[in-house]
Length: 193
Picture 1: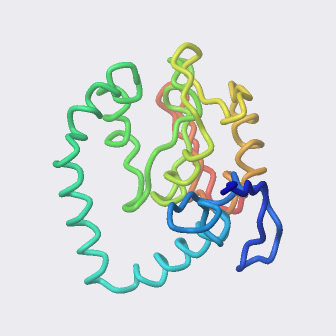
Picture 2: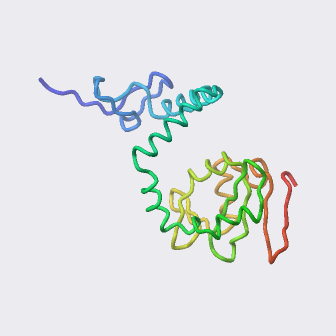
Picture 3: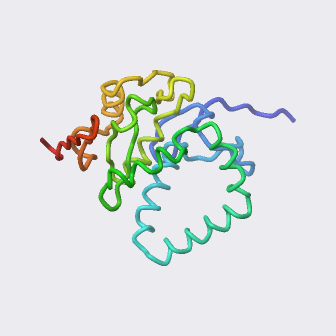
């Protein structure tokens, strides 16, 4: 008996023919992959979690499950090891939020961790801050971020331009205000100005 090899298949959701690498593996299907592509699976999962997140009971159960997983997989020790080489975990950076006092539900985003740019930050809502870090990788040698494709974002303008291409306009929609501190003087630009 010969085994048939498959190279591509059609997603039953989007009806596009794609290579098998774009489908999650599943041992019980004929070709060893799901019939729905990864892109459709992800969009469906996001849609499902947005609907479910409106239910407070579901949210609380998810939190409990996450806490249990954190303990079971010993993430505290793993995170401690990861944080050793991250200078943004330094007390100097953690205490900056006390000094700047961002509004409730907002966080400080550094585009660079060089001492010259220490207090040159964006104040973003918490959700946007977490989402933009999906596209960024911290370069500990240069003390700034780079994109996942390797583009070094070593200036504030490069950082802004890159995130605009990802749909985050740090000068308008997602920022409550932009803050630059120069020698004790605070300059705040309100949203939309």
